[in-house]
Length: 212
Image 1 (cartoon, rainbow, N blue to C red):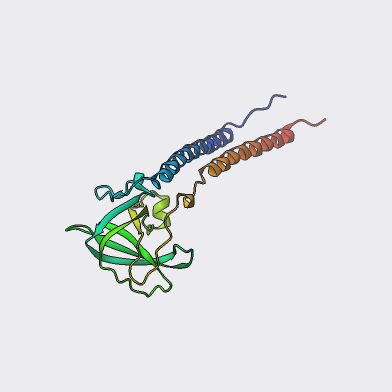
Image 2: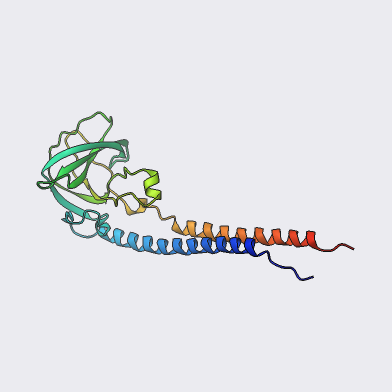
C-alpha cells in the first residue's frame, strides 16, 4: 500500500523546519561577526591612546581602546553595581558630561564606592581610560523588538574621582559569544521536529494499514 503525505501538515512542518535551519545559519553568521569583532577589540588593547569619537560615540571600532576626552562639566550622575580594579564589589559612579554647548556628550565611569549614597567629588576635567559600552537602560521588550537605541562608548577612567576606587578595566573576555550554541540549538530543534513528524506519520500509516 502506497502511503500519502498529508499536504497541509507536511507543508507546515516543512516550513517550520526551514525557518529553524535558517535561524541556525543566521546565528552562525552572527558568531563569525562577533569573533571578528572580538579579535579587533583585543588588538585595540595594544593601540596608543586616541581621542574620544565625539562625532560618532556609538562607533564600536573603538571598543576596548584607550581614549582621552575632556569633561567640561558633569550634567548628571548614575550609580550602579560594579567592581573595583582589585576585584571588590561596590557601586560604580557614572558621570554624564557636557563637552560643548550641548550635552551630555561624554560618559565616564569615575570609580567605585562601597556605599551607593557616596557623592563623587568631581566636577569634570580631562579623562583617559579604556572604552566600553555605557550601561544599557533600555527595557527587555525594546531590545527584543529592536527598538533600543545603540549604546554609546563610555570611558572607564584610569584615575578615580576623589573618594572613589578605580573601576575594573573593561576586558574583551567578558563579552559573551553564544551564537554558536544558539546555532546548534536551532539545528537540533529542526532535527527533533523532523523525527517527531516522521514518527507521527509512521503511527498514522500503521493505524491506516489494513488488518488481516
